Length: 154
Image (tube, rainbow, N blue to C red; front, side, top):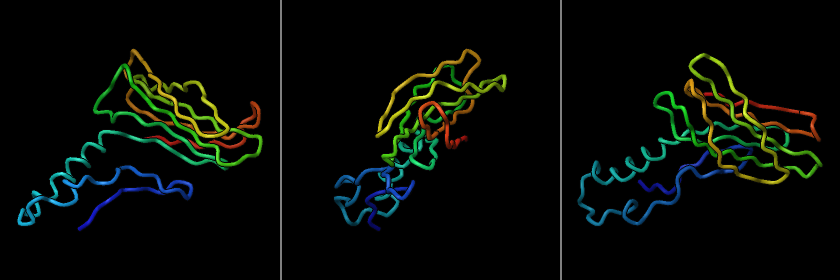
């Protein structure tokens, strides 16, 4: 079996989740190696990728989301990468924001980040009550008027 990339489709675009395999992963040096050992590199790499969580969704003119380390329990500090892409040159723009839920069940809607092209932001969310759930909202705006919005949660 030859594996080169794992991808998913979002708004008609192929986005890589895992890059090309190294020569050591793709072809073992000893062809007589049992299949279980040959696939161990793939399994290890898959587990490393699974430590990251994504929340993403699509609006009428773009898409975006949040990427963060998968939660195994509540955290008071969470490093997040937000990203957004505005796919249409129409005078509108795309905004993305983080949404978190704490131990009291309260949702925190963080500030919007906007772009009229493509942009990535690295930020940190903090909550003294612990962050239990993470989501992202992506919206299409014209000026300050929200035209369309989607939410990616859990």
